[in-house]
Every structure is written in C-alpha cells, then in structure tokens.
Length: 138
Image (tube, rainbow, N blue to C red; front, side, top):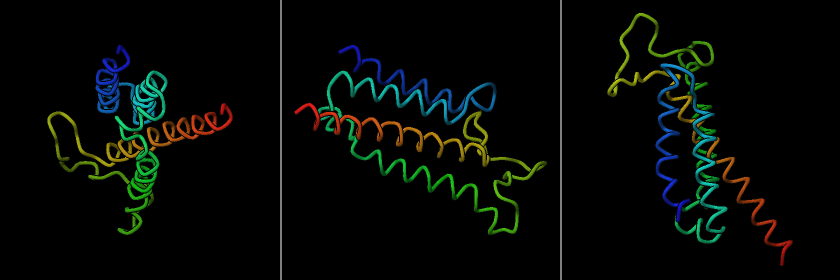
C-alpha cells in the first residue's frame, strides 16, 4: 500500500528535477532515473503481472524508442537548416516562448526526450530481467 502512495510524489519530484534543471542542478537523466525508481518500486512491491496491468509498463519499449527518436530529431534538425548539430534555438538575443516560468528552448526538448529514453530503458531492462528470472524460477 505504501508503494502505491509513493508513486505520485516520486513522479512529481522527477518532473520538478526535470524542470528545475535550468535554474540549478538537475536534468533529464536524473529526473528519468528518479521516475524509473518510482516505477520499479511498484514492480518490486506488486509483481510483474499486476504492475504491467495497472501501469501499462508493457509500453516502455515504445517510450524508449520514442525518446531516442526525439533526441535524434532535436540533435539533427539543425542540420536541415544548414547549422551544426545541437544548435541552440531560439538563437541568442531573440525571445523564447514561455510556459509559466519555463523557457521552451532546444535544451528543454532534449532533456524531455532524454527523460523518456531513460525511463523506457531502465524499466524495460528491469522487465526483461524479471521475465528471465521467472523462467529460471519455474
């Protein structure tokens, strides 16, 4: 029961670390690891079948793939404009778009895709290990 109560705060903290990375220490990788640990806590507490059913964890390979494609897109789209890889957008000196106090820039998009990639990979690896362990135990 405690594990279920901890999931929402852990995910909120991971998003706070993701967003806070532009004001102080924090980034998509750290936030992704925090979110992964929250999901893996559910996995350990409730078992593979129940966690997969309740949290739809069977979709994490697709999330990892989407995160990878997104990170590649953010990195390589500047090449289409004739600029170097990972060129910052908007350019220095121009106005950025804001959502609340969050500045929507290339780094934010890249960190979000890294967040999704890390969550997908870590949870996907743990699911694969759990499935392999069940086969050995039986």
